[in-house]
Image (cartoon, rainbow, N blue to C red; front, side):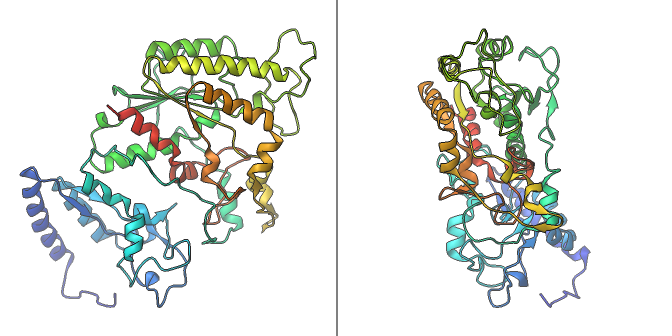
Length: 440
């Protein structure tokens, strides 16, 4: 790295890459699939004898080497080759780890991965072996978990406060037209990659919204690998903030059920913040004229408008409806409750500018405190023969649900929603929906 290549000009690099581009283009033109790795973060920070274990910023690395990065990636694109970026497996949230979860350096020198690291983590290379379309994802994949392993970077006031603004789930999506077939139309309806034959429908409230960045990330990866839009599903999000997509919310719920039957999406995901709408505080023998849902953002406020038996009846209808969707070929996924609360709120972690409370939440304690609701929801999903998704698998390890990642960043932007960058980088439980949508 001390060699300045004083005898080599930018023009020389351009000529070298032009020849490389011509040769690769000849191969791709002959019908040979060609994969080329771009410049990925390396340098003294990765040297096992010199590293201090502090992650390296990918954006700073690329900016520092902008000229060569741009020339290399332009040559790959013009040669119609598929670019592979190893930093996709090496970096999270722009930070590239120099040591693994056991604090062992990931490279044997300044630029070569350890064999065990390459074997375990460099899944971006799988496409070379399988030669599958870019949308294809492993049928069995490791669930990404931000609670596992040692803390790689300490939390700071700035990191924690940055999380409070990390919420823009509709970024990259476009509004559904008012004459959409996915009626009734609502101003919050959005879509991604419209017009494709395979459709994934997101149905619910803001807990379905918070998953959108992951689908955008998968779509961008697909395009980055030169995949055609037709080889990735359309994402249709029928989500309404603060409204329960549940039988207690009439007539909207029934209208949406009819819409799903009419449009027959390839995949449906139902996700909502259950505890805000169905959390009974009165006994079954309480007289109620018309049981209703509640909207209770405060965790102390249970609902006085319905009884446990009302929730059971609504869930029976819900399970019947989900099961009916599957009869016309829709693969149905449904999210259960996952640990949430004030402990996850970034502001709760601070006292002034000091970081004071990062205590994890106990998953077993949370589920026990909400036992009736958790067990009833999961029984209904099972009765519907739907695939249950438990997003706590991403931020809980050995029952400890960490409020920050191993990079010292909050998991949620408030008390119950994944921040956008977290959903994008970690919530790969939803990747299987793309598999299901594109399956023959």
